[in-house]
Length: 227
Image (cartoon, rainbow, N blue to C red; front, side, top):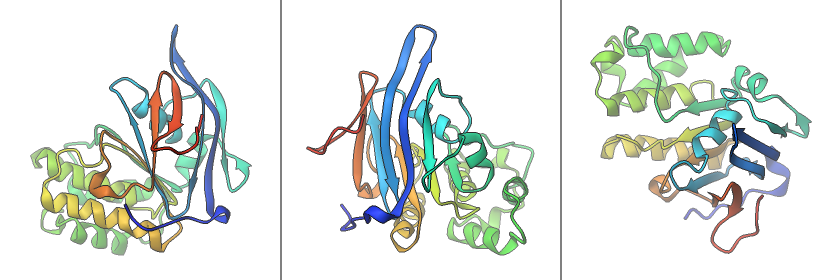
């Protein structure tokens, strides 16, 4: 576990009373937690416990039934936050259009984030992910592991303050895991906070572990309850 303790003044995100149900089935209720700059928080839980739903709500892709998000002390709707480029998101499925090339995917994402002159940032990420030689390849011709690397590049493209990752190590080989670890490691030197869901922390980078169980969120390993 990294020797890193974010300060109380570095709060990025405060989730308060988040709830979600599908029909009569409660996914989770009154979820509360905080994410601080330089921190990597791992959300665990059994299959169907709501990990993916939680991240999709924070990414503005699924509406919640109740609850608020506070960013720098101000309430911000998730969909609005996601459009600013302040949030980077990697879903359980990378959702890549097979007709686009590797580079076209990142160029299109840059337009969506209103990035100015993104070419150097795209070049940097492609080089780090070992995708530079494949940048004119259509994504339908990539293996699942290479598509995962591209999806990681897209999540980090706007240099977001908050990164949401759903099983980010899925389908990655050893080199791909090294790339992921390098991205996760950068948070300690900047103002970024990371929240990821999965069954195990990639490369041991988690500072805290939260567990979704019986529709509640609690902090694991002897820490206080978070929901």
